[in-house]
Amino acid sequence: MATVGIVGGLGPESTIDYYRRIIKAWQQEDPATSPSLVIDSLDAQRALQLVASDRQALTDYLLASIERLSSAGAGFAVLSANTAHVVFDDLAARARIPLVSIVETCAAEAQRLGLRRAGLLGTRFTMEERFYPAVFGRAGIDVVTPNAGERAWVHDRYVNELLKGDFRDATRQQFIALVDRLQRDEPIDGVVLGGTELPLLLQGDTIAGVRVLDTTALHVGAIVARLRQGL
Image (cartoon, rainbow, N blue to C red):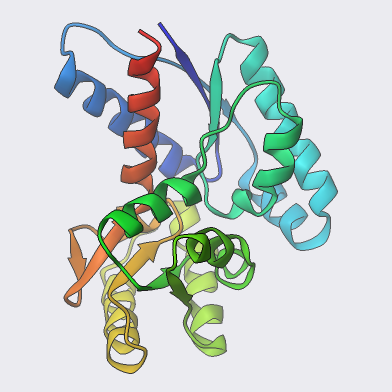
């Protein structure tokens, strides 16, 4: 059986969600068994500091986790956070085992759905860096982000609430209003929940009438498919 290695802890709530979803998705196909996985839990605050100040150190920090997962028997690895994909290409080039990208998985689904213009929510690093526009651009899809003030608000709620497992109804309603604003003013035909804590706050197939791309769900689907290929 294939084994997946999960770089977790970025943050803890989404890592738990990954574990639960992988088990559930696997058992929907094969309830008599369970998948093989290994989790290496990192420090979310340290990772955020490195994203902001030292990308080489961030790459080294994540690569050390992937190496531990490989040594523990993982045949491939995933990063259970969107922001960490800012150094995905460097990691993929240096890692001893293959990596499955959350961004590439999401872009493939957006292309399958025929989306042309997708809103993107996540940390300010995810919203402001080029890794989402670059990958989606190859599929002919434009990426739209909130304005500067909205990005600051989203990042603040993400870091100071969602990463801490604090999911408030008032914050949920404000996110819904933001997606509604993007749909009216841009307009967008889909919204990427580009942070793996966001699906814990915003559940459902649509937000304000806009199609949702749940990056956790899509990534889990790709992980389980890869695991089953190893049987």
